[in-house]
Length: 367
Ligand SMILES: Nc1ncnc2c1ncn2[C@@H]1O[C@H](COP(=O)(O)OP(=O)(O)OP(=O)(O)O)[C@@H](O)[C@H]1O
Ligand code: SF4
Ligand SMILES: [Mg+2]
Image (tube, rainbow, N blue to C red; front, side, top):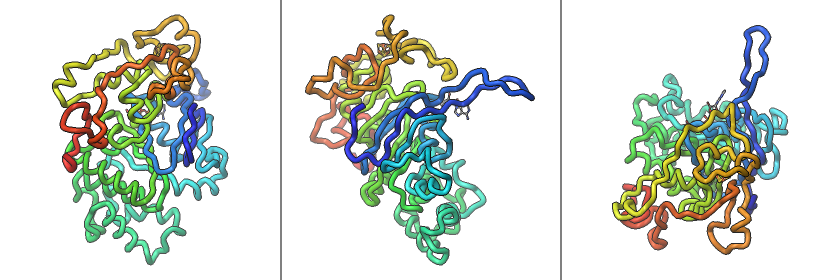
């Protein structure tokens, strides 16, 4: 696996297997749901790592392990070199302050009976050392201001806010303990498209204002490209390809990434007409019954005998090891080949691209 400079978070061979049991009185384990089955990645300080993949591939389970809402079955999560899976509960509580989560659904993740002030200030109950009691109201008002909400709204309840405003409240709460890493699990998926861009812009602004590193999880590849420096593509509990956003979007070498990209809507009709759609056949296998060898082989149009026998490792494929090209990035495929599915962005127009062309994501605030 390629190393990233100054990793703030290092995830190694991370697994989460949920036991499948039979029997009522004497429960017997008969198998396991391998929700996460060997995930590796680094998160560099100040960067945004996007994680994409179809529903059920294990994205949220990874997120929950990063913030200790789930204990890994095995593997390591190192924060500044310290393995969180090995810490005592007390030591873990202190370190966890630095890694906070923003949840998907702003409608269900905020307690309807609590005021916005109590919701945002709740983390101070667990970590009173961060803000003395007398100072909390001021801090919460500051946080409201930082996320673009009126500080006078402090005594209002979640139902008095729109979806986008509620997600701002969730973000303010995530910032309360001044974390260094934010794990955002589908933070804009539940929002209207017009509001999505505003929340993405807010996250980008906060990143530079507070030196944050992000793990940004989404199934929408366009938004992930817009916000991410690097992108990891997950399939059935593993990352199958990882690289910079240009490497993944413009020079994908894994057939699964190529198939996912071929389904991304491209606004420009000309670009759309020239690209090839790759339609995957068959369903995603159950994580309780993962295929041997390459886990993607039951849906891969390139599968050969070797694919059933040998697990492809996430590494730079031999064909590109000595190449001086963006195809030289980690890809877990025995027969990795570069295939451009999405037309390249024009370099002069920033992350969202020019009018049309390869632009995948429209940000109404920055047309
Ligand atoms: N507590 C649990 N017990 C058993 N299986 C679980 C549990 N939590 C998740 N799973 C299973 O693990 C797999 C991964 O789930 P996860 O929620 O991480 O996927 P996801 O990529 O976040 O999907 P989505 O895009 O729908 O949010 C799924 O098959 C899910 O059914
Ligand atoms: S290893 Fe084989 S089955 Fe897996 S993605 Fe590559 S070609 Fe397809
Ligand atoms: Mg999820």
